[in-house]
Length: 344
Ligand code: SF4
Image (tube, rainbow, N blue to C red; front, side, top):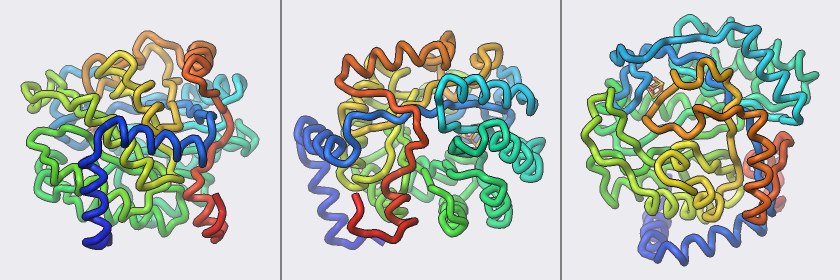
């Protein structure tokens, strides 16, 4: 657990100006990660969800969503097309969909590995499962798992996430770590009633969890949820949190997230300038894309993730960065796996 002294250090970090935070974070990113930006193919394979998180457009009670679940062949065809274009990391993300049992997911993971000759890293983002389920997914060949905690505030977590306790989510993150996954988590910036103390707690919990990947993004009010009238989070605060995370978890992979690009023009670029080193273009077939609306104005609907790679590469060059299509294992994970504390 983060000590009192460390907590005070993190609090003092947050008293610094945005320019100071960004400059230090960008320097760390350059030194440890260079100019490359890892490109991951994101496939949103099911928008069905049995959960009812208050902020989420895919929540069970939102009757306006046309529900879909891709079949195995559709998923594999999307992966193959992106693999042929050079991508070597895929993120399979979905709601908590009972039709996607762990057995079925294991078979999918094995099929992805066959179709990509075992050359691609596979990340799953499929919610809370048992430790045994995580073990079987890892044994099937999944490499990484994303499970965001969203807020470190216990009571708010339970309220926002339909009664699921923070303790249960942290147990799942522990199970993932013990299973040997490269583990990602993160939080939303600017949730309703968020305080300075909450932001500090979110950072402290991220440090405590020694995350290999940290994904954050601004809260964006979805009109079809109970939080429709709440103000959205700010880009400035999102940039500050990104920079703070890069300083506190220098070896973690940090994506410039779609939510930031949706909240503000240039939002993802601002995150890249503040220490982020990953982009996740959407490779979900276009016919399904507009039904995966966690929040409104999502910045990927009319784009084709594969064809957009040329545009992404050009945009990164304009920022002085370079698209890297490789596996991009987290430096934090590699260091832990190899037991080499002196490694980068
Ligand atoms: S946040 Fe995730 S678990 Fe919660 S309703 Fe949305 S898709 Fe389901």
